[in-house]
Image (tube, rainbow, N blue to C red; front, top):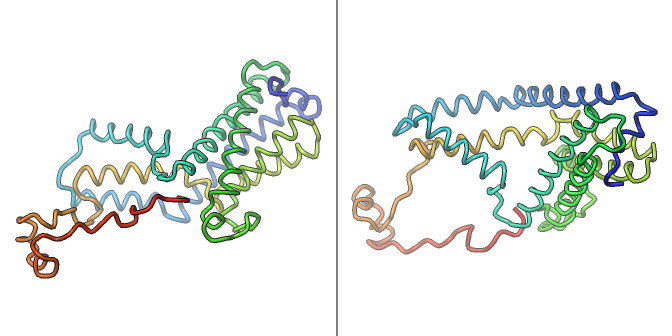
Length: 275
């Protein structure tokens, strides 16, 4: 099963041209859905205006090399390793789902466009199955045990939260029916696989699919405004016990004394259990 190209047998019923046309249609659906989402939420306009506002209050100008370095940091941290997740279980689940999805999609494209009728397609069938399994394991782990409403609010795992769960349900059903179809070559499983993938890629405008494109952009902008000193017009971090800080803000000693106590860890006083 893991070394056989499932699309090779399918090519006897559905021509490779139709399969390739479907893949192209799904790519266009993602592009169109993402553009419509940007227009509806005005996310691109927000990023542009926010960058313009930050540049006016910047304390220094970042060089091209600094911006490139921050872009590399963003890709290495937020994109490749998902460091924004403090909970290691949530982070591992996300990485398994993300890399599984990427491997599954890339392998699907390779099999359909390069080996549509070849039962032995090298390493691609193995990668296709590994990607689907990784996506399913990471996704089901999140769905049953990590979702905040399930883990901390007592909501039943089968409760469907409309648009909020459309993306993860689309991912899980696509991977699940793909594996069932590959193992059984049952046409009903194939129809459900295609239906699930169509919902996944065709519902970008309504689901959270497009957030995977916005998150890196937001993370990069956050690093830039922190580096240039604008810091999104947030107040700077001060040492409350420092004399220059107290002279600048004379009400600190009045309300907190000349040696203000450490205010504690705040929300970090206990380890995160979900996010």
